[in-house]
Length: 151
Image 1 (tube, rainbow, N blue to C red):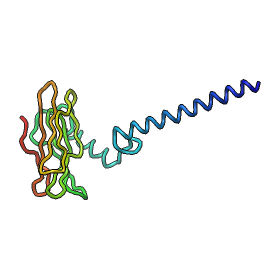
Image 2 (tube, rainbow, N blue to C red):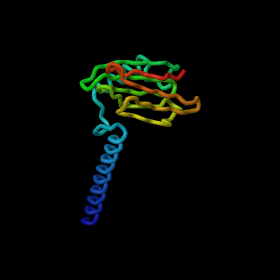
Image 3 (spheres, one colour):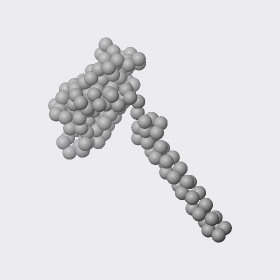
Image 4 (cartoon, one colour):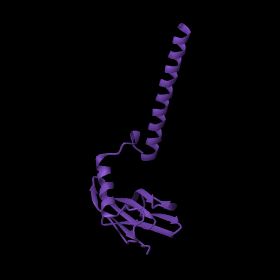
């Protein structure tokens, strides 16, 4: 009987250790994908992404646009979202310098080249079966503005 109890306790200890290791690994992977603790996003981030999806600026395969943009004021500067058939970016200005804060290729596209800044201009090139599409952004009067549009 004591042998059986020891085997059961050993098995339970192994289950607990494996469960904790799995939870830790999931948390670590979530942190790597989202850049936030445990993969948790703030309510403001979720609301912004939902608004962008609703108004079509972050759709994975929108028609080519010159500047599908949504402006929001942030404490550190102005922020805009730009998209084309290849993907979308969120750019922010801090003074005269622009930074691509996020970029996301559309389905079937990948990032070919990225210059995220901060710099006088920032750009990303998406490449896929439908061709190459670039989004290049500068700051003008403290606002991100898309330049050199792909059609």
